[in-house]
Image 1 (cartoon, rainbow, N blue to C red):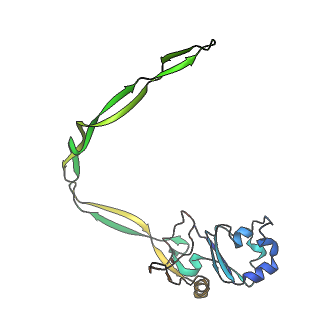
Image 2: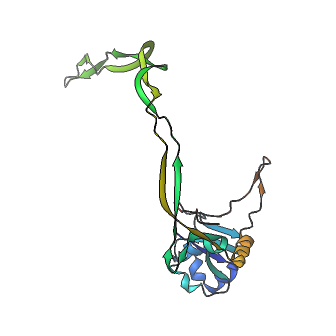
Length: 230
């Protein structure tokens, strides 16, 4: 999935041109696409901001402004795509040799002396309670017993663990499969420069002197696949 990166290079102009879009009381869905409530997928740098979106819905009203740039991680960094020749996706045959190996099989079970099973005693404590009848006469009667289970230090046995031995050797095998052929698509240098300007990834030193470098991608929605980015 390709995610939309919305970059605003002049947030004060945006606020002046579209006050209804960022007014917290307006209820506009666009506010969530420009100025995040939680900040999870938003980056601020002075008068500039950048936000990761899952779609372009609603951006049309502002995308024509010269201070709004709509791009993507693919355009910024470049990406891998399956090679096509004359509109035909390309594949190549890849052969993998799996060496012979001897698997381990379970041949039985034995006591695991590191995992003892202790005797548990059931302790019943009888109780009484006092009841008062309609004439005000109190009577002591049997109450609900208190039942406790106490683990003692008496070993009653041990948990079992499997015993392994060599199984029958599996001979060497060959696996042949067709896999896609990929090509690199270069990113847009201008978009990369703008991205670095808004999100410079300056190292931060905490109070304990540890140096932290912000990640390459300022935000990644959960479950996003990034293997194809260069």
